[in-house]
Amino acid sequence: MNLKFVVNDYVLIWNLLFQASITESIHKLKQKIWINYKEEYNKVFKDNSLMLKDPKNFIPNDDTIYNIVLESKDYEKIKKQTERFRIKLLQNWDENKKIAVQELKDILRFDIRLYHILVVSDQLNIMDTSLVKGSRVNTLVWGKKIEDNNPTSNIINLVYQVVMKELKEYQREYQDIVKAIVELAILNEFATRITGITHYLTGDSTLKYLKRQIYPYWLMYLGVEKDKMMEYMMRDKIGFDISNYTYERQLKKLDLYAFIDFCIRNQKHIVKIDELEII
Image (tube, rainbow, N blue to C red):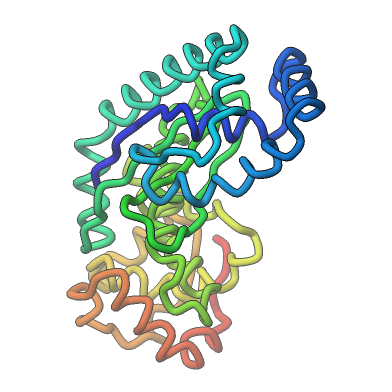
């Protein structure tokens, strides 16, 4: 996985204009622009999908609104703050990159192309993982605050959103299974490896039952031998009767896409097992 952290003026301005106001002065600036340039303001709203196709080369049809914001002192302050946030994100990623990339390669078993992380002010506290048809680059808008007491949580969340975007259109009719497996891969196993503490009971509460059903096969996918499964059950606080499962040795040779396909093909058998419990 390769991530490039970028501050793009157009992306930042668009989000300042159309997300919740982060300061009183920005709120007043937006009101002033709206009063004087209603038509132009409305047209700018449609620019988002266009700029996300190729942010570096985006040129608006009408730059009136953008220029007004660019020339304001309030924007200058926010731009500097966003640049500092970008550097903090980059440092956070660089500190964890080596182990993160190594563990992701072992868990996912497929490559993720370069992603441009379009950094906006963390005061917005937003992210945008929308799929844009015809995109020339992989983009993800990021303005989520970093937890100072738990900076790795930001890396885990960022990686999760990137992987979810990669699989957003995969097996679309089985999105619950796809999301459950991505959670197992990133929010649970990847997070456990990065932090050294089990994260297997975290994630979307509506997917817990499904994830528990997949869990025995997930261990097989990870290459955990049958005689070692009890250690993982104790670690992750998820129990099941090993004797009820045929060990599917071929699973450890699959990538995540193929494992998803396996679970979809065998979902009637996998989900009907109801002996799992929290230890």
